[in-house]
Length: 213
Image (cartoon, rainbow, N blue to C red):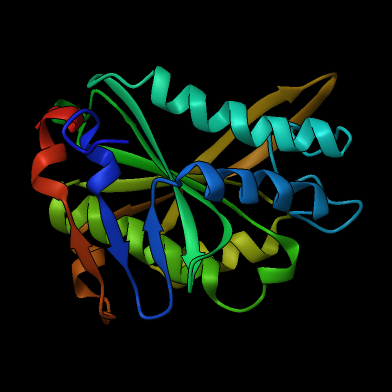
């Protein structure tokens, strides 16, 4: 895709081991192949949207629909940036930065998934640091939010390690089940006090109008 037509295709975030960017066609297909192999352990249900509960084809197509939907529905008042997590060109999963009314509210939310084989190696934390660097240091966000099921201990640990603090709870329906999530919030002041790792962000200037800046 030409960057002049869709500037986020020129956006790149590099951390010590990873690159985060919009996937190309072959990388998107690799992500769609990765999801059916598993993104969480059997018996776990870490996502409010049960996109992992179908068969392999359902999970693969959900990845494609999610990517295409984020591109098609982009608006400066409500945007969602889903970036492939790549190590040495290999797709490991997807991290998403999203916001509503960002120029006024200046808050973002994050979510992610990684292939099961790539979990437990610090990639999720490193990718989140890349997203937060974009949000706080380049888009001037005031706060970042996330919502995590109370029994999702791995995601809870990542968020708290990065300085997120408790911000209440939310209750959502999934079918006939009421699910409680912890709301967690990270402020720009806390972010800037933490120890930094090397993160390089390129291509932001051309994207600023699409973020409403």
